[in-house]
Length: 178
Image (cartoon, rainbow, N blue to C red; front, side, top):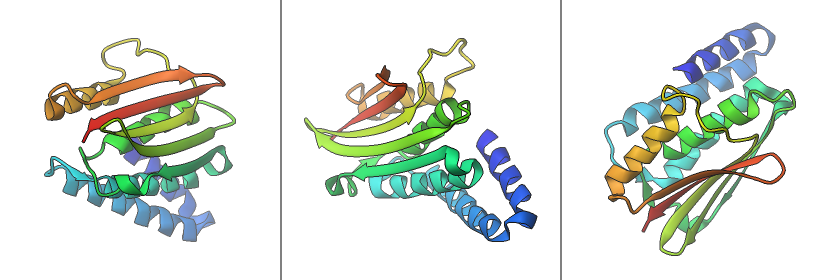
């Protein structure tokens, strides 16, 4: 809901000064909402679809953050046809924006990576920032829900890890069994 509020405020502010960007942002937002509504009824989606909606989300956030946000994708072609739970990657991208990019005056970069590794689909979201354990149970709900969904769907065989790596970088990794 917070994302929707930010997106609508961004679009509202662009309608007079940058109408073309407002139209593009509206289109991106409608694609994201359509995907969210359609994916609610599905247990799995193609990884390619999840990456496409994540790309739309980051493009929308790029309109909001401008030069403060850069993003890149390093997606192994072999992973596109694999199935994953919907909104897993999108949730990680939202977390990267909320906790890594938004609080930083300089902004930062988000990288998306996928590869097949040791009988797992490995999906990583890499962003600038520092991971800090949530202070309360009301924080970190997106990550907690992601871990719970992975456990339920894969019987404890899927793995999730979030860690700080050198140079002000956070890596969130999801390992989905093939």
